[in-house]
Length: 500
Image 1 (cartoon, rainbow, N blue to C red):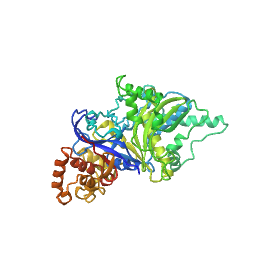
Image 2: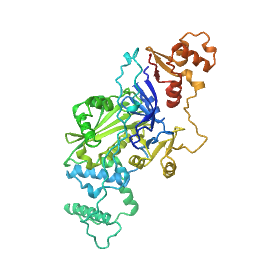
Image 3: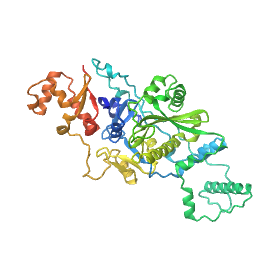
């Protein structure tokens, strides 16, 4: 029977925040995961955890400087916005005509166009589970937490000087009138080329609305053999993406977009951060064709790799881990385009497995302007940090977060954490791994052969245990860990105890 195996690091309260730039106000709990069962990681996501390579972390929202709320989108309820349609059309036009669009004229003021990533790159010790016995306690890497922040600068939209006002044009929105006129002229030209006449009347408002409500899949499907460019998106296991082409793309992205010095992005760092994963690839009758696990979604333009999305496919969701692209193609808004492609991918998976219908976007940070864009996807939900229930991200929730950056999002006082870990009832059932064998915490304590141990009160037992084992008393850490991961994970994953 496979198990998730973790080593808990505990809490760090002197971390640097990559959102507000504070040097010592980020408070985070973390652990290293040697292996992670997809079902366990799904449950951890639903309790506010998130991974970077083998490093799993959870901000302490109630006290940290920038509370991070897990955000997901229901792919089956998602509706394209006008901004999303423009990006899809821009890509299709580029593939069809091969002409680079004039972004200065098309640039949107909508925050959804910001291409920001929020996954930290963590230095973690390489750990061999077979060599743990006798080693020193692993150094807690939380103080090296550096959350990367996209540094793309937003340039103000320039007023067009080439526009000439047409008769009877709406002066408050001249661009829209002109674009509509151009579309009509192009459509008319197509009909005339076929020897047919075209009359732009005949569709009532209901028909016009229905005809314009295309899905992501319909936009993606607008591919013709005569296109100047061919875009191919393929899914490969992350371990199969360990090659020089992918690394060179990642290195270019980090240097140009994140302003990393050229020597910083190393192949080893790339491999540790985006290739290696604790998730055990699982394929069975209840999984998608490619199974559950970690994958890279590669974007190939003709024969050139231009973007890679790092994804985790889990029992109930597709979780976006990271995305990097060739900065030479930033005019295609690849960050937003990839999120739409990942949503469409989730929709296709949900047709095979109906429960796998959610797209997880990482963390929503309301007090960080560059991270609020994630809330622009329709049918999005935030995780309540106290009840671990999902709340629709609507104007009421936004107003609450405007008042105070930390909130119990579920306003019903009667709702409680259904998976709450209670020390008095659940501590004895926690699974621990020590000296290459696993057992419950209760059995582990009894293994010290103290005859009166089971007859003492819990507090006395803890003191006796400390006298027998020295200062390496894991009890308080296990209790903290159990409350963070929840009862079911605490009694299903293996908590590693490392000897002094």
